[in-house]
Length: 92
Image (tube, rainbow, N blue to C red; front, side, top):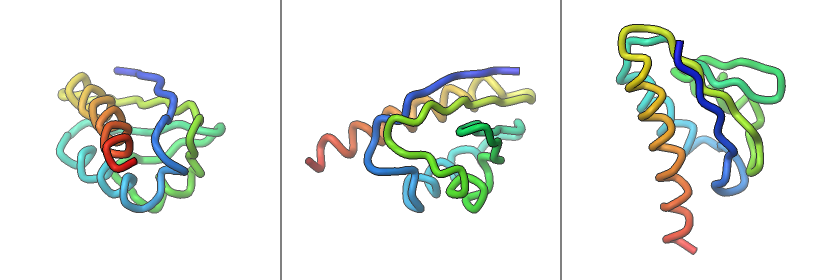
């Protein structure tokens, strides 16, 4: 199992657009991928589950993945979160 903690640094929250991008990224992998936040766990391949976590700027999330491509899956989500910050900074 691969694990990674991330402090959410982008925008107001993990609203529908960035959550949708995260789901699209997660669905590229066969591994089971979960996002943990605020004492809850959500399947990273479910937009409904992700948005229900109430992730906001400053939230600490943990990404876990289990499966044959777990390392790549966690790296892809880490890169995505970094890119969301860069996109927001370039729009400011």
